[in-house]
Length: 113
Length: 113
Image (cartoon, rainbow over all chains, first blue to last red; front, top):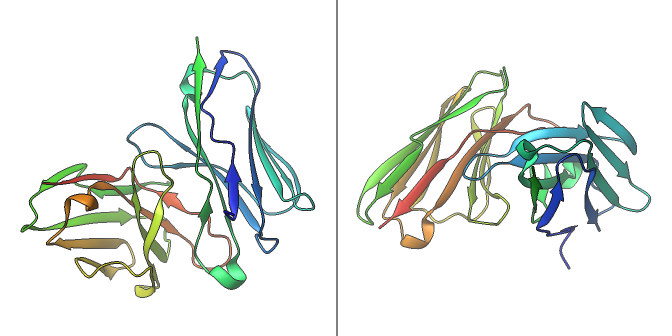
């Protein structure tokens, strides 16, 4: 079993839809949670970074962490064609893994105009 | 400024060539990383430098040789590569410590012929 499971998609939605991207994890020692957006043939771009359980909002993006359920989500409101990309969740356990990030496999999102 | 730059953008090399990938950041980060990413897969960690010292080598073959000349620069020297080493090579940086909020560069797309 992988430490981080991410819904693989691909996911295709109409413009303006609310998108929900999700990851579950098995390692309860994970403390830091990140969402990266990666456009085709580009490097990953850090979108959201959270530490504690709860919600964090940045514009159209909301990151949600539920440590009790070992579940994280990224919500995109009013999705745009420019949001079409692969979204990677990542998390870390600094106590034992130091600088290592554990990534999900990524969800490919297409927003259709 | 959250920019990590990488050169070259693209590189084609034969199996007998020697080449180098370069990475630079000016965010004052003291941890720098090399990752390898194959198509439709998440990044795989190769090396971590912390305060200009190699702290993690993920059992990478010796045909990949990292170097950190100073706190802003990171090189990856390549020699006698195999076609299966063709991939997107990503550099990232962060503050050392527990947050692991890593910022990625755009990558170098390497093709080994």
